[in-house]
Figure 1 (cartoon, rainbow, N blue to C red):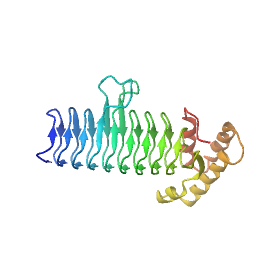
Figure 2 (figure 1 turned 90 degrees about the vertical axis):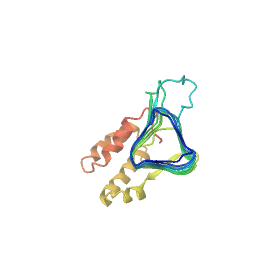
Figure 3 (figure 1 turned 90 degrees about the horizontal axis):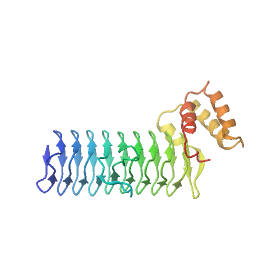
Length: 257
């Protein structure tokens, strides 16, 4: 463990062996930091935050701060972070609220570029990428491998499906099904995230079937129920369509369509 002498650590904080804390950091009460995590200079970890192993938090980030919610009245609420995440300069991560379940969760192997904001009660999966200045409002769910472009904004309670991509400077107000590429002002679903799927190792046949699923959902003038009936039929030859259906059927705000 290496802690710069200029940093201030609350006595209740639990710091594992192998943690590095740079100069002028403040580590507040009820903070747990896992082995191998590196915290650069001028980082504030406010309170009630659990950080896993081998994370990197760059300078001027604010982690585990009180939620920006007028209903918050000082209750015990938490932020939980997994392993091997990279939080670049100026990232802000807020704890949950009692009304929203009391916890904000961020999984593992995520990259949050400079000045990304994750608000209270959000659930972020694994292997996601948030480009510069992307902002996520409260109670949002971001599934595995999703990508948010620079300055993208997501409304409260929205769900972003696995492998979806939100283009830069795009405002999303409804749920985005798995695999879809959304961009523009106003936001619209353009296609499937073909490049992302190729990088993830999806087979050419699976990508072909997902392109057909996109057409069923967005290009054939079908009602949502009619489209879902056809998508269920397609699962017999393409299991990759199952997560797409699940992301649609679990929607509570209605899908971007």
